[in-house]
Image 1 (cartoon, rainbow, N blue to C red):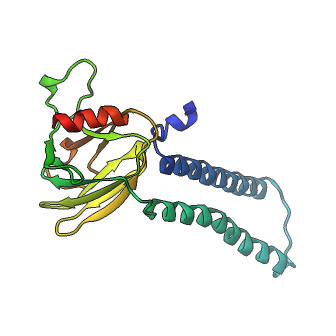
Image 2: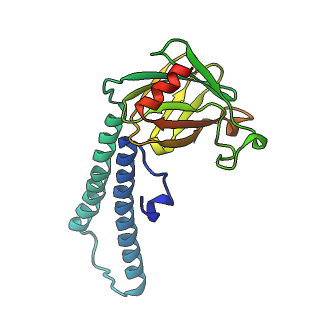
Image 3: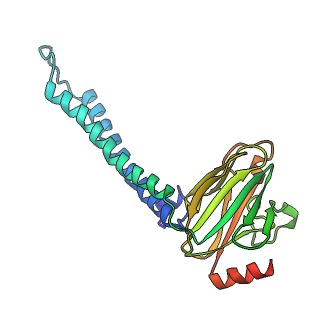
Length: 226
């Protein structure tokens, strides 16, 4: 990703995040065009002395400044609706992972395999290695295979949490008493981080998400060791 986008978003690792990045660029170009046009009009009003005490109305101008915002909103709304439908679309997931939020850690259950579940706590600063990130690394990472469609089910055991990984373009609320669903497809290996995005109490900022994407062979080896 170029340096311009890296100032705003993490590098995308999923098709949905790529679409969100393109939509961000599309919307920002429209906003910049509007800003420049309005700025030009304001400056031109200040510096010129064109006045007409006899002009009472101009229906052509009124029609233009009514239609232009409507057309602009359509250009923003159509791609936005498309992405919303893509995010909610269920595309025959090959595996399901259940994520449960607690105060203040995450639990993971691989329901397609027998009795594979574990808790994931933030690593204390004293236990970090040189290659690990403070406030982001966990003692147990969520391991997934890349290029595999997955279904993420989220719930909570106490208050509302939000399971979020920005680089994957996924954010699902974890609400007590109900199960929410999201879809995820990671297209390359790596380690990706996120955090709870719902203010859930005193240690809200200390329940990070650490996800590692590996090939299918490494994933099955990890499954067999669990």
